[in-house]
Amino acid sequence: MTTNRALLDLDAIPSMFSHNVATAADLIALGLSGNTIEERCRDGGPWRRLQQGIVLLGDAPPNRAQRIQAALTVAGPDAVLTGIDALALHGVSGARLDGPVHLLVPPRRQSRLVDGVFFDRTSALPVAQLRGGFPVAPLPRATIDTCRRAPSAEHVRALLTSVIREARISPTTLREELSRATSRGSALPRRILAELDDSVRSLAQGWARRLVLRAGLPTPRWRVPISGPTGAHLATPDAWWDDVGLAWEVDSYAFDLTPTDYAAALRRAAHLTAAGILVVHTPPTQLRDEPAVVADLLRAAHTQAGTRPRPQVEAAA
Image (cartoon, rainbow, N blue to C red):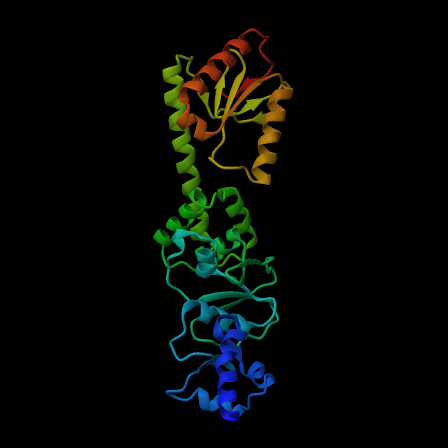
């Protein structure tokens, strides 16, 4: 009867630990002896050792979640999961890349070598978010950490495109995260971010140019710097009708602006408005989905701007 009771207790132990991963110290604290643990981890036994001092409370090969749990257990407190696993837990489809479990750990943490795990010591540990029961780096940080270790430009481009389009993370946010990262591995994601930025702007500008033609408006000047009466630069709007002093801004991305984007847009609008310039703002989604509405707004704004004295500003030659 005592033996059966012991077996029941042992069988119940896996449910006490996340993903059936425990340290030998935890098992000993429950009352198991070192000999019992060793016996159950032998070939053909119900448990197996993952790493020194880490036990998988099952006999099947460890799955990815169990490997992550084992790595976090080895890394100790404050470790944060990043890289492809963090991206997958954030729901990013472009995270389907192979690679080791990637953990961020404090700079003075002595990390031992573990197969299939990359310990990234950093003084810039992010505030972790709980995803799938794991402490995970915020999506921008996980994206940049992954890109810095990605094997090719194609992987970086696919991942950045996925994060920008699906997760609605702006390139501005990614560039800011990249600027805080170590320079190692940053050149490729920096270049591809610039390419994606140019591509999206070109797409929006193409829609804008076609809309102006269909609207029957005079042809504006595109991306021309505007200076105030003192010669100080005010802003560079996407389109500028010099005869009436009308500016048109097409926001670069079809999702909510980041605080940095928003602050920059406010500064540009404030400078232009203070100089007496009428400014029309259009998100690309409206430009794409409601071109007739945008055309009506621009025609009305052009007419209104023409009824006022032209502001004392100059467009660059």
